Image 1: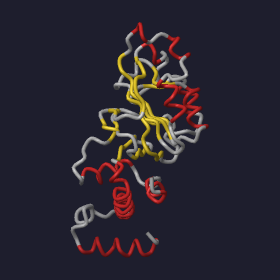
Image 2: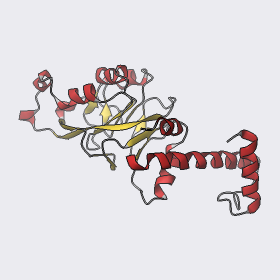
Image 3: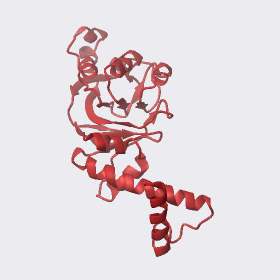
Image 4: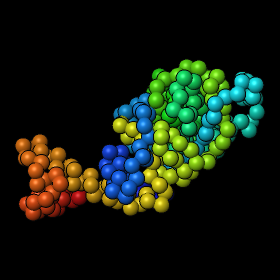
Length: 236
């Protein structure tokens, strides 16, 4: 990812990014029903590295599979690149954990930017204390083996109804997680930065008692002139 793009995406909201993507006809890029374990962290930004689960078949998924060093879940944790986000397709099923505190800690120590699952994490109170971006549907104590069978790494997946391709740009904030197609990342980041400046201006105006009519959207010349003066005064 372009370092300048990463820096811009650290400063914009998933809501603004959703609007920028919607303008381009993309409606389903927000990962549904996932929440941050620590909503006070800065934005999570990184390229997607994926792990896919399928329904477990009991005779193929005993606890002994973890003895295999090539087990896909273990390999995903050890191969996810520094600065990337591990995105896990758990079929929107949080009845068994996608991962736990030890694996998430390993991701953090390897320099990964964050982890997202549309299932759940076990050891979630411990993960919440790491200061590491982690998003899930809800806590889930049972091991993933009781329900999920890790099957593929770094392939296209669905996560919370959003399509995720390896290398897509993942952004998470206190509200949730958005997926930006890789080829759009630079232009979406630039547009969202412009939108954020305007929305900050509008918020100030509304707090001062101004009507949204003619201001949001800026259909009046006065609104456009006021915004230009506001940007100049603040260096934005």
